[in-house]
Amino acid sequence: MYSEFFTNSDKLDSSAPLTVAPLTVAPLTVASLTVAPLTVAPLIEFPRIPSTDDYMACPEYFTNFQQFATSGTLQLPVQYSSQIDSFTLLFFINGIYDILCAISILRIIHIPILGTLHLSVIKKTYNQNSMFSRVLAYWLLTYGIMRISGNNHIIAYSYFIEAMFFGNEYIQHNSVYPLSAGFIVISSMLLGIKAYFYM
Image 1: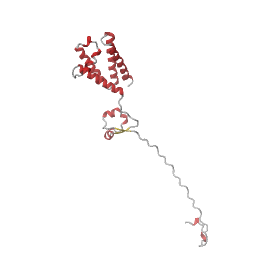
Image 2: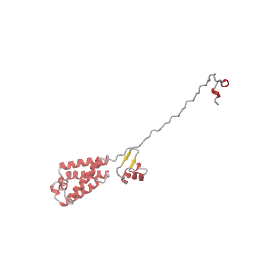
Image 3: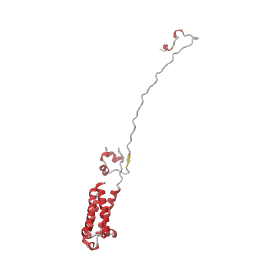
Image 4: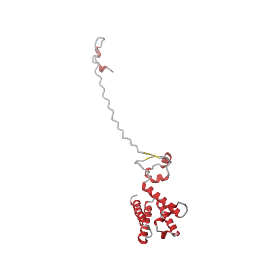
């Protein structure tokens, strides 16, 4: 089978030189291997077992909620932030403050400064009436609850109503102190606009 390599194969003897044709090997060509880039979505590590509130807040990201709830690790296609907006926090704190003021006026708890802050805006001729003070407290309780509701439109309405109340009392009845009432009207309008249009 190797006779094609020998040019003098029929005349070989011990003294004759052996001539071998050069062996040519075709180059080995390997098709290039292309690996698509591996894209890994960012991981959000939760330090707790997520609740159904997490699921409701972002349902489009959950393909298998049971597996997510068990592992506590969520792989999202985009970055997800659970940080609380500063204005949302401000509205909530303001709501808690109004509730505390209300129950202080009603003497359910005893925090003297909170029991007098809102009443001090109203002139003494009007705030000496105990029935008026209690009605004001119930009203404070109402819009305090509105402000912790988390509904931006309801929060905005509470601020617009408060601004209207103090503005009307000053313009129509002169029953409130102008500087205090003016501050409340302006700040309430700004917070209401923020909650209604920009949240």
